[in-house]
Each structure stands twice: as structure tokens, then as C-alpha cells.
Image 1 (spheres, one colour):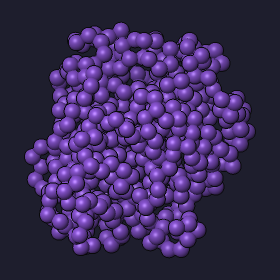
Image 2 (tube, rainbow, N blue to C red):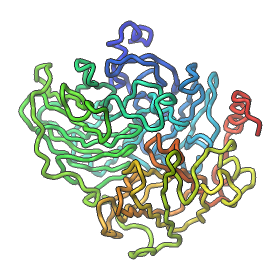
Image 3 (tube, rainbow, N blue to C red):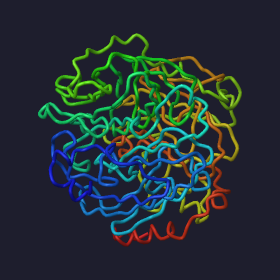
Image 4 (cartoon, rainbow, N blue to C red):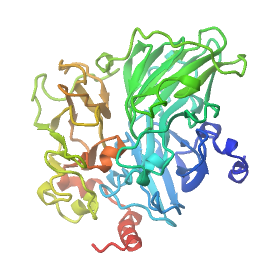
Length: 518
């Protein structure tokens, strides 16, 4: 089906991207404006590959990804520049390809393209990609990314793992992000690109197909801008085997909470009577009539082969074994870096989060994107965090050091999901717990810092030179300043991360287009 024929009817326009073949690891990725109606409400958007979510990008462990992002945007309200982040990928030796605007690059301007060329030598699992310029991904530029392991140590646990087993959860807004206010309330939940809102209770829902007797590795990705979701599937349990690209010891649950930017792989055994079952993703934030599951909102359909093509009449299974993050443990190399006691690292850092009514602050500074990307500042010879912009938001980290990072909860708008670029970390103290686990804590790249009285603590090793963003992944909060940059091993950054000529051209082209004088 061609994209021109897709424009024929709004019903077809709302098709989710699961109807399209996966792309990658070598591909063009067109960034376009397009009118769609995934929940029945018609609006213009910013999309990757003309679909929502964007096309699934796939590859295998060890692949060289070469993704040429082509900016064809024309809607100035939703920004005509763009920049893409490959969430969860370490980008070792290619910090310039990490994607956050004004941290590692200037944005790509409309009418231009830019090649993200990076390797994934030692990562497998479930990731995603999204715009990392202002709040642009809230207008649609987000999609899944999977790196398959031909020698997956847990392959014996499942029979099916392909593009049909990727499940995305997204919030959807009826107003363009720059016009929606500081922290807008989502109008609907989209599962695999489809959903309903209270005023359109007959809009199409995503159907996830299974066959009785088979075991499926589902890859669940929260690609939202704000909500976390309580996720369940009527009549079925889920055996978690991965968190944020990290294999975990198999752990069975019947419900889980997934925060923005987190991912879980779980095995579902299709062993129930042939029929239709509700897939439920209840957000923590929504319109007054947008919570719960009335008329199929916040829902999709699990459909067994041979079942009638009707909506389910199942009731929600009582949850007896809800996921606790502290019950997840790495499959291999489980110990946290450092010594097994508080502060048993080379550098311990505490972050103090505050809010003044309009801006967030970390240790007294709001993150305000600089005109010159942090990486370019470092390449130009500015190595000391005190001299790097934005002031107060850049922290030096020395090479090959163990780092302990504690982030107390309680600041308004929580629980905040914090994401660290360029690394995974061991969560030695999780939200809702006062126990410190140094022996086998879950490793991941995005963690909820919880609420008041929480002091979530993570550890990682500085083995990846370059500036790496640490930020709240509620995009509205990032836009309001809830971020810092770790300038890791600045003296080796230039040597380790040689930049291509086209990267050097991004800032002059962007500055000229935006009439910026630097």
C-alpha cells in the first residue's frame, strides 16, 4: 500500500505502524508532517516514516546502523528542525550520534539530511527512538528499535519474537505540543498506534494476534511523554526476561507499572481458551473521563487464532503478583560496581531537585539548552565543567571511576523517570524501598525516583567518554529544566569520538536558518 493511497480515508490514515515492515539497520528515515486520526480526532503531526508509531527499526547484535534522517518538515508550530535520539544505545566512540539537541549536536534543519552511523557491538534487547528537540516527540516522532541476539540465552523460553510482538504505549494529545501548555493532560492512550477517547468510543483498537499453544516474547515500550501505565492482560500472566535492554532472571507477574522510556520483555504463554482478551494500560494521568477502561479506552485486544473478530467481554483479572522492581535481577554479572556499602564508590553525587512554579532546578540550576552543543564546546577545548555551558548544569566525571548517584523523590510532578544516556546503571535502592542491594540489583537505563521519602540510588562506571544527558523523561519536565549533563572524561572525548564532516556542518546550517549569531 503506497503512502499516497493511505491518504484516501481517515480510517486508513489511523493505521498503526505494525502494518508496515520493519526497517534497518541501513535505511533512510523521512521526518514529515502528516494529518492522522489514531483515536478518531484529526490533527497534524510530526512523524518518522509517515506512521505512528514510526517504523520499527531492527538489527542484530554487532550490526553497523546507518540511519539517514531526512528532514521534510514544514509545520513551523511543531518545529521544522529535528534531532533523533536512539534511546538506550551506548554510542561508545560515537557520542556525536546520540541525538539530544544542544548536548551532542545542533538540530537538522528542514531540507537537509544527516547520517547517524553507529555500531552496537555488545548490546541486544528492546530500545526506541524519538525526537530530542524541545517537546517535538509529543507530536508523534517516536518508534521502537530492537536489536536481536542470534544467541539469546533465553531463547528456549519462547517461540515467537518478531515485529508483531512489539507493543508500544503512548499518550496522545489533540493540541500541538508548543501550544498545549506547560504540562498538558493527555487526551487518550494509544497502544500500537491506536486508541479511543471519551468522545470517540468507536475508534479502532489495536489487535495483537496469538495462536493457542505458542509462547510469545512481547517487547513492551512506554513511548509516552508523560504517563506511566499499569499494564495487564486479562487471563494471562507475564514472565519478565528483560528490562531496558538488560536480560533478567525470569520473573512471573500478572501486572506491572511501566514508566516513560522504560521497556520490558515478557513471555506470554497463549494457553487460555481461544477467544478475545482485553489488554489494559491504565495511565496515571488523563482527562477526567479518560481513566479506566469504559468503552475500550486505554485498551487493545489480544486475539487468539480462530476467535471471532469481536471485542472482548473479559473482566480484569485480580492482580496478585504485581511487579516490584526489587524482584528483578540481572541474568549475568549481577553485582553493582563499587564496594557493598553506602558511598563505597570513587565519587558519590547527590542531586537536589526543586521547582519554583515555572522551572525545575537540579542543585540550584535549571537546564537551559546552550547555543553551542556541549560536545562542540569540549571539542573546542573547554574541558572544565565550570566553564561549560549551560552554567551549573554540567558535571565533570573522571575516567574509569565508580559513580553513585542518589536522587531523592518528592519534587512536584513525580514520580519522575530519570534516564541516563550512554550507560546502564545498577539500581541499588529502588523507589518504595529503603533496602540497598549491592549483590544483584536490576540494571537499566531509566528509573523512577519515586515520591517523598524515597532516595533512589544508582551506580555506574565511567567507561564511555563524552557528554551524556541525565534528565527526567517526562518531556514537559525536561523542557522546564529538569536535566544535567555529565561531561565524562573530557580530556579523552575528542580522541575517542572522531566526528564526521557532516556533523561539523550542522551548527552553521542551523544557526543560519534560525538567524542565530554565536
